[in-house]
Amino acid sequence: MSSEKREDIEGAKRNRVVAFVIEELSIGGAEHMLVTMANCFVERGWRVHMICISKAGELTNILDQRVSLHVLDKHIGIDLRLPYRFIRCIRQIKPDVINSHLWVANSWSRLSLLLKKLPIIATEHSRDTWKPPHFRMVDRLLAKRMFLMVTVSQDTANFYTDDIGIHRDKVKVINNGVDTKHFASGNGTRLRTDWFEGFTDDKRQKFLIGTVGRLVSAKNHKRLIDATAALVNDPEIAEQYDIHLKIVGEGPERLLIQRHIDDLGLQQHVSLAGARHDTADVFAAFDLFALSSDREGHPLTALEAQSAGTPVVLTDAGGSAEAIARQGDESGGLLVRPSVEAMTEALREMLLNTQKLEAYSSFAQRFALEHFDKEQMIDRYEAIFNKAIEK
Image 1 (cartoon, rainbow, N blue to C red):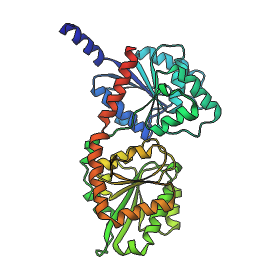
Image 2: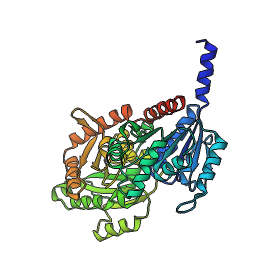
Image 3: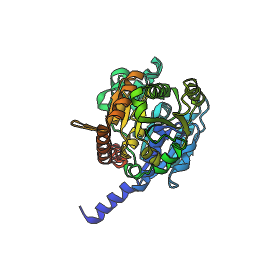
Image 4: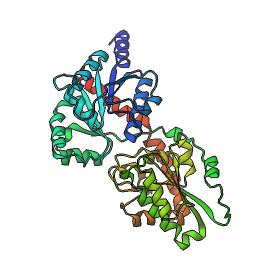
C-alpha cells in the first residue's frame, strides 16, 4: 500500500463522526462518563455530536466546545413526533456511528432508526430490574436493530442476557474509566483542616469517612449513617478516634437525610457538604471512602477514590465488585453485604487495623493508575465504533 493511500485511510479515520445520545446531561454517573467520552473522542480527532433527547442539562457546561450539541425537546410521555425530529437531526449531522446511553435514549434511537442501516451501539449502565414486562419486550425486539450492546459491568451484562433475553454475542462489557492521574494529584490537607475545625480533642485520632454521590434513595445513605452511629457509640472506637462522616452531593433526599442525622443526634459526627467541584481534593481528604448503595452499575466514585489512594468499602450491589482493585491476595478495599451490621464491621476492621488500611491504600492507587484509566475505556469503545463502521 502506498504511503499516500495509507495517509488517506488514516485521515478518514480521524474525521469519522460519532453521535452520542442520552435523555439529558443532568448530574449522574452515566452522564459524567458520557461527557468524558465525548471530550476524549474530540481529542482523538473524531467529529463529535451530542444529542440530548429531552433537554440539555447541567453537564453540558463541561463539554468540550468542539462538541456539537443538539436538543430534541422530547415531550413528557410518548412523543410521536420525536422520531421525525431525531431522523432530521441525524440527516443533518451524518454520523458514521451512534452510541446511545440509558433506557430513554436507547429505545428512541433504535426505534427512530428502525429502517436505517446506521450502526447503533446501545450502552446500559446498571441492572434495570425496575423495567416492567412490556419494557423488557421492547428491549428484546429492538436488540435486533443494534450493532452491539455495551454494559459497564458483568453484572449488568448478566441481567440483559439472562433476564431480558438478549443474545450473549450481542453484549460486550466495558468497565468505566476515570482520569486517574487527576485524582491521584489531589491534596486534601486544607479540606481536612476546614472539616475538622472545632474538634479540640488532640488525644484521639481524627478519622474521616466520606461518600460522594447524588442524594437519592438508591444510594441508601441511611445505612451508612447508621453504621457511623454504631462506630461513634462503640467504646473501643470512641476511645481512639474522633469519627466524622462527610456526605458530598446533592439530590431530592437531602432533607430526609438531614432529618435522620438530627434524629440520631449525630450533628457533630455527620454532615452534608453539598455538591463540590474539587473532587480530587475531596477524595484525598478522606481516610476511607464508603458506598452503601442498594443499586450500582460500575461506580465511578469508587474508581476515583482508589485513584486518590483512598481505600473503599462498598456494598455488594450491581457491578460494585468490579470497581474494587483486586489482584491475588491484594485489594483496594472491602465488599460487604448490604446491611448496617456488615458495613459497621467493615469500617471497624479498617479503623482498628491501620497497617491493613495503609496496604489497601497503596495497592488501590497503584492498581487504579494501571487499570482504571479512562483512556483504556476509550480505546475499547473506539475499537467497537471502528468495527461497526467498517462492517
